[in-house]
Length: 403
Image (cartoon, helix red, strand yellow):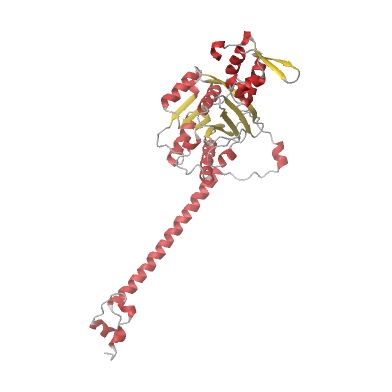
């Protein structure tokens, strides 16, 4: 036995809370390892074996992911075109007619950006009817004879509301339209199983034009509508499905924010990539009188200056009108102005203003519109004195209405 037994009880031994018996001390003095030290070495060896196995498992997983990524890449990308621009330009290409002349070309994605309750679903419904029946959209824009059918993913209306709308529109070829009401359903294009189901649905029904209404709800499962990265994944998913199924055009209504936008500055709510991605942007707005206006901008000849829309309530059908935004501003007050002039023929401009029928800007617009329509006549005395009269044959209000 060593004379200094305390040397055997060092902190590195006692820190493990190991009780060393007298027999083990004797064995250590004689050069033999005690059992607890052998166990510790065995544990360390087992740990090294476990770590090595875990590392190998991770390496196998990463290798499998690389193989899967490569397989996916091969299925979605066939390689670069190994031709010069000169060769590409002289190569014969099929001339494809526009889906909607001046508004959407084949192979293009269109968005319909619309104010709150401006009637975007009604406008989309009018497009679907025109495509199914091969009739001009908004009674003005020629549509292509589609080589297949139209599919609608409606996340917003109840099924009854959707059927009521399409029933009122009076679609002749309703057998060419396939409607899926997805409001309140646990459906998401972010889910691989659901995506494969969509591919089958579009293919089996020979869908060549796909309406996805609206963007905000269709994005479910992809993340935030304000995050460009999340929305980009969603838009790429749409592209992939379109490519796999032979769809030649899509329309996706998009809400604007509730804030009022200046004319020409309207944009979709959320991530900016939605507007950037669209080949054609359709914009639907309404003014204070409730009149709707429509315009379009985009690639490859797509473009339309703002036009008013006329709505036939019994059928839900839309057509383009001739009323400008300035005229619409006056139209709201025209009947009141006409009635006041009829009750006070020959009154001057200052007297009209003093009557406080509406704001001066609205009054000027109403007078201008009435003059254009022939219901208001202006007699001039010199260059400043104006006297206003109403043309009796064209007036539709009475003196009692004015009072």
